[in-house]
Image (cartoon, rainbow, N blue to C red; front, side, top):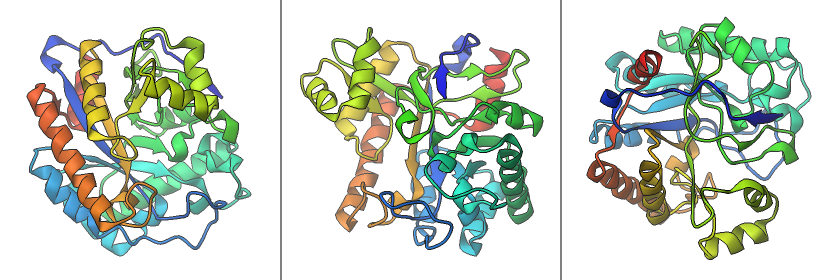
Length: 328
């Protein structure tokens, strides 16, 4: 499924300023290189959510935790999420991993790991089951969504509107997952937009920035970078065109600060950061293998958050964000 840029962009008021949002794909640990399976995963990193929350609160940031079924059925995770929901120090959203989310009516494979590839009725059943389980466990009804593996499909927006979701954050701009059966976001930028004319569902893409001499005219070069690791490496090293997602996973603080500056120069008013919760504990993602890597993870945040403060980019919570977009 190829996603194109939308014709209903959000036009922020001057009062909105320049803001940033931190989002966490809150999920089980599994081998990213192995075939998908319904069982055999762990939730070892759950206790580390509290450490990150305590850390980020010092910066007066209210993160958004997009929670999948394995997490919401973990008692320790439920206790943590219930606490931050009651204290209103974080937002809770839905994060759909089809392979671990009932009902289990599909085959487990790469194609079906993208929820948007499922039959419409099954995608809806899984979405509602997860939403209702979160509500039953922690006492709030989530209205924000991110598809696992960024796997939106032709019916996703319609289903989210039907079930009173107000925000989706499934799009990862400038990335193409069509080779695995997923969506193609190469033609989509990082600017938020409305899926519908009635402003019922706000799309808040993750932020990906092009840096380099060709950043204003990426065109076919970006598609070549996506399909050829060699071309990607050559263009990045030559500084002709470099794709920088805002994440501590595989991106240095130096690159991230450069991307922030480019985004602000281009008048991008909202920056959306993301990472996977298993990176909060060593040994569960390719990005945090050791205790030293984890120290580096937090150092990354300190450096980037200090840079945001220097550039007068302030945190925003979901409620404020949606209200500001609707009023824009």
